[in-house]
Image 1 (tube, one colour):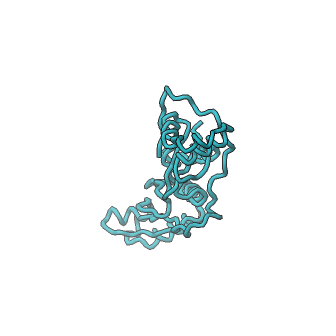
Image 2 (image 1 turned 45 degrees about the vertical axis):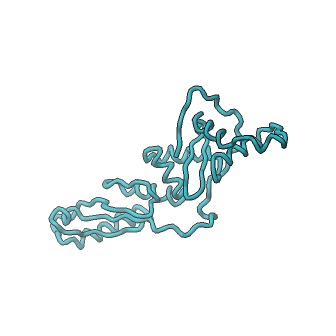
Image 3 (image 1 turned 90 degrees about the vertical axis):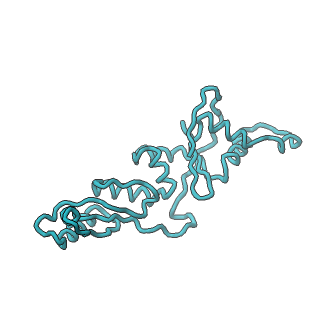
Length: 200
C-alpha cells in the first residue's frame, strides 16, 4: 500500500469516471473460508481449562445462542457467564478484538463478504473504521497489473495526441512514481494486482 504526499508535485487534474469496485459474487475466485470466531469461557480459562466453541458468523442472535450453549457445557458451571473472542478465521487480515460486540463482528463479517481481501486492507488503513473504508470504495479507479499501466491509460484518456514516433519513449513507470508522490492515489496490492483509489 502506498500513500505519500509531496508538496512540490502538481496534482493530476484529469479524472476519468470512477469504476465499480470488484464484485465478489461475480469474480472467478475460490470460495472463501468460512468467517468464524472462537469464543472461550473465561471462567474455564482462568481455572486452567480450555473450553469454547468455533461459531460461524451469520447473525447476532445465532452467535448469542451458540455462546449460551457453550457456556452451559462449561466445566466451571457455577461461574460460566463471561466470554471472550480468543481466535478468528476468514476475515482476510482484518482484526477482530477480543471483546468486540457480536454486532460489531457481524458488521465486519458482512463487510468482508462484500469487499474481500481488498476490503480488509482498506479497512486496516482506516484503523478498522468500516464507514470510512466503505466511503473509500466510492473513489475506486480500477484493478491493474501496475500503477504504470494506469498511468498509460490516464495519458490515453487525457486527449493528448502523442506521435507514434515518441510513444515508445514515454516512461510510464516514472510517471507512476510521480503520481504516487503527488498523493493523488491510494494503492493496495492484492495477489498480483494493484487496486487504485483516488485519494481526494
